[in-house]
Length: 299
Image (cartoon, rainbow, N blue to C red; front, side, top):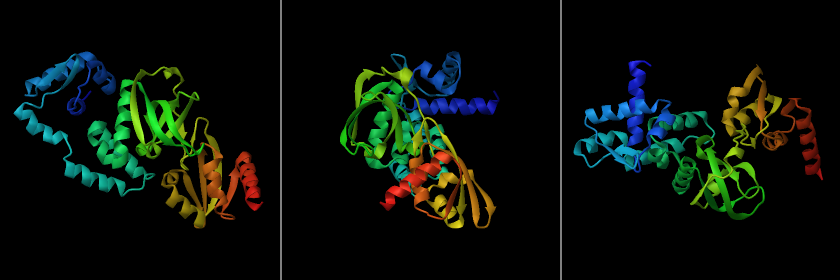
């Protein structure tokens, strides 16, 4: 590892130690893919340059009571005003824009999620996202209180084991304890998240799927090829910006979309909304699906 890479790694470890409850040696070792011996060496280096490292039952963190550390720690935090400005800037970008996704990932790589959560998530959802993150870290079950389901059309509590967040934290992959399935729960539809004492019991069954460009989820992607008119092309980019990487130009008025989808619901809805503007080139099952839905609409 180069000296620059080592310095960057040490800085990342230092940033993570600037937290409320502390980090274990094993956690730091696993997160940064370094040996536990290297972690201890980093801690010694931090102490030598003036940081006070507090150890509480194996959980290490920076002691901010020290005046020198208090001054340095200003570099490790967003102020309330900075977080507000950052939040406004980030939320001015569409949720599906890749730029927003990359920005969030870069912030996450520099600052621990606990520190930037209020800047990268909507205020009313940030507390729930924070609790879900703690559940993932501690591998504990949670209750999604008064979850508004778009499929079953009801509102009720769900006991789940959260696995990971989707792009820009708009959803969270969870194992639903009640029905024994992995699925995505929209963070905007959760009223409150209650952290339980019970640990993950179904971890071997945990599985993350994909979210396609039409925001549909699946564990078995389906390949499709469409030809789009200029009108369909423009609308696709406006409504689903992540589709751009899968589009190639045939002519000034004709474009080709070749990608994988989670199911036919999202892409089917898009096709049905633009009659005579889209041709299905590949996937007979998709053609059949669209025809059946079109016939239902005509009844």
